[in-house]
Length: 261
Image 1 (cartoon, rainbow, N blue to C red):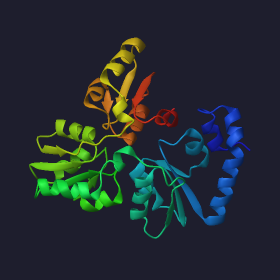
Image 2: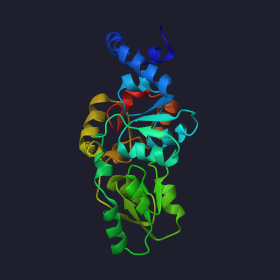
Image 3: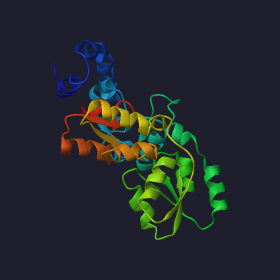
Image 4: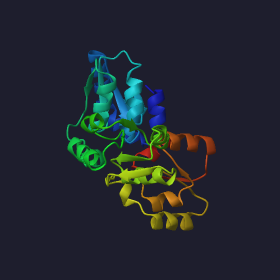
């Protein structure tokens, strides 16, 4: 039977692949009914999970908030560790599961609560702003958390001359470029985003003509300088919907473009 999900998946997956994974999807759906569970899938999941298995989709914080609106007892978070932790923080009465206990994030794994405490000792009376892409331990040591979409607003809301920003140095540098507030950085980064370079993006733009480039602020500054738009995952989706460019290059983690197609 053709469903809305399979029709959407057909835009990005060959029919043969849909048929191949359909028995697994059917078993997932059976278990969801049996256990009163939902699958919450991050935007970066592969199209088969995103389009066929997921009940709700979004970025890490959006998933945690959307889970509040469900009556499910169990949330299966198709994402990485810190996302499941965030979902549990926001939904303490629900069981939150993660399909792979080894699913980590290079950015979140690059800082600990002890690291934050050391920075606070080095810069006393300086508030710590931590990106939501961090462990629960790091969040607990921070004064406030932010998303990539509201990082600048959060930093400026504190009414101080300087802040400690963790863990993403590139997001922190982007914030620093937009404000007069001193931003003290933890030098962490996402192993995927740091692979992109401004030179490579410039070459693509030269070779592909009128292509538009949109980039996540976790990318290095030279990449952001080449972008036509810089914003969060949610912001990039909205930008594409609003501008409907003929060609767009999304500089972020790999599966995102399939989910926007």
